[in-house]
Each structure stands twice: as C-alpha cells, then as structure tokens.
Length: 402
Image (cartoon, rainbow, N blue to C red):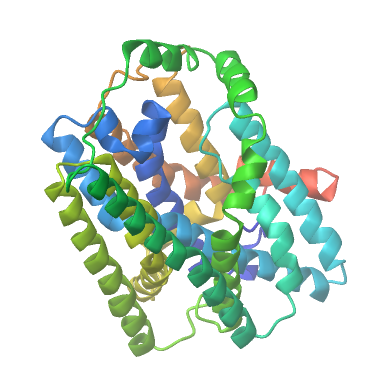
C-alpha cells in the first residue's frame, strides 16, 4: 500500500504482487461479511450444506486462505522500507514520515473495524508496522534471519498445539472428534440484528470487542512482523524488484507453491475424512498449513513476476489494482456491507458460503476496470489520497498534470 504517485518512481513488480494479493484476500473475506463470524473460522457451523459451499471452501483453503494475507504482509513490509529509504534520500525524516503514515493508517483501521467490519487488518498493520521500523537498518541477511526466526517461533508451536489439542479430543471421545454443532436461532437472530445498520454494528463492536484491534495486533505480532521483515529482505535483495533471473524465480515458485499445496491438500483430505469436524478445521487452518504460508506467498510473488515480465495491457490493469490497493481493500468492505447488511442489500445470514462467493468475480472485474482509468487521470486512489494527505498534514495534489 505504498503511496508514491509517479509511475516512474514505483516498482511495478510491487504493484503487481500487491494487486494479486488484495484481490485474493476478498475471496475469503466475503464469507466473513456475509454470515456469522464463527462460520468464517469453522465453515461447518453455518452455510456449508451444498456441494458448492464445500468446493468454495476447498479452493480457498488450498490457494488463498492465509497465503494471500501473508503475501499482503510481505508486500507491506517491502513498501514500508521503500518509503523509509526514499524519505531519507529526499532529505525528510524517515521516522517522522513512517510514524505519521502508521498513525494515519491506524485511524483508518479503527474506523474500518468499529464502523464497518470485524475483519480489519489495517490497525494491526499500523501497530506492527511501528515495531518494524526498528529493523530498517539491518542488512538483507539479518532481515531474512529475523523474519524466518519469528515465523518459526509462531508456526511450529501453532502446528504442535493444534495437533496436540486434536489428539486430546480424540482421546476424550474414544477416537472420535466432536461433530459440528448447529447454532441456535436466538444466536443467529442476535447476530443478524447486530448487522442491521452501521450504528448497530458499531454498538456491537464497542460492547463485545472494544479493544480487539489492539489485542489482535499483540496476538499477531510475531507472525506479521516476521512476514514484514521477510518482505523487507525481499525488497533489499531485489527479489521483489524483478531483478532475479527466471531460473531463480521458477525455483521459488515451484518449491514454495508446491510444498504449500501438498501440505494443504493432505490437510484438506483429513478434514474431509473427519466429516468436517470443527477440531480438524482448526488444526488444518491454524496448525498444519501455517509453516508453509510464507513459502507459498513468496512462490506466488515469484510466479507473478515471471508471468508479467513483458509490458502488456493486462499487466497494467493488475498493477493499477495494486497502486490503488488501499482503496480496493476498503472498497471491498463497502461493497460487502452494501450487499449484506440490513440497511442495504439485507442478505446477511441468508446466503451460504458458495452463494456469498458469487460476489467475488464481479468485484474482481470492478477492480480491474476502474483502477487504471482512475490512475490515468489522478495521482492516487481516493483512499490513498486521504491517507497521504492525513499523514503529511496537508492536501496532496490529486489530479495528474497533463
């Protein structure tokens, strides 16, 4: 989500990868906007009866869930270091520039969470991004070492704990894990009422999760900081600048995506074999696949860079989505709220997982259609302009000069 305006000053590879990531994120976020929050984490609880629901879950689990957020975090770290470096080169204070950007991003994130949707990640990025500033002067190898160490510190205990918890449940139930429990009509009605209006959502968030953006940042600190540092290392090594040879990118893509898909496929098989038991959902999503999220994300980045080596109209479209990633991310929430919440489309809780996902392709198409024509005329996406203006304390020039 870097905010530099001029295309000549940008790394188009960063924009491309960021564009792919923000599009992928909506593929899973749409479920969290369409139905009760617990169904996002345990699909079998609600909206999971049809074959389309299960296929949607399987595709997202194999290709998107956790991987695109990891990719977005990697790119955020790279973009953050890029802005810090350029601030210093331009004679501005790197610290002032960075912390002003993070403070402004935090305000957007808090507004996003309390006014619109519980799944905000901007507040966490802002808070953890402030910590990442301490690592800005490290060399590539040190950044890589810190990033990998933090990711291992998070992923290995997660995998071990999830497996141990699953085995404990099997032992308690004589070799069987608990089956999905249906949600009570009263709980579903109360949840739907909390999404009737923006005011209702805000009151619900303030009463039920008043400090969640801050506690979640603490819970996600180790993993997200590790991903950001990995992104900084990828930027410093010129991996994200597209300057490696195709053979190197091919190896990263094959090993990263291949290993991630293999572990995800085995995990998905175990989930299906369990009859979609909640304990297996948890072990698969929060345990077994976690160590391979970062390698798979880097594999996606390598594949994207290889596929878009040559200039093309399609490359320009995806890069524009990435240049306006902040607007596209928040725009997805605005669309989701309009479609599902009670004051507009009023489909909240009335669609299954697969039906909710049908909104994704039109929104992807909209991202690709609007981003480039807008950026041909203006320096920033609407929310990028607001973010930059707030961070710099003055309105930035919006329209591009002829």
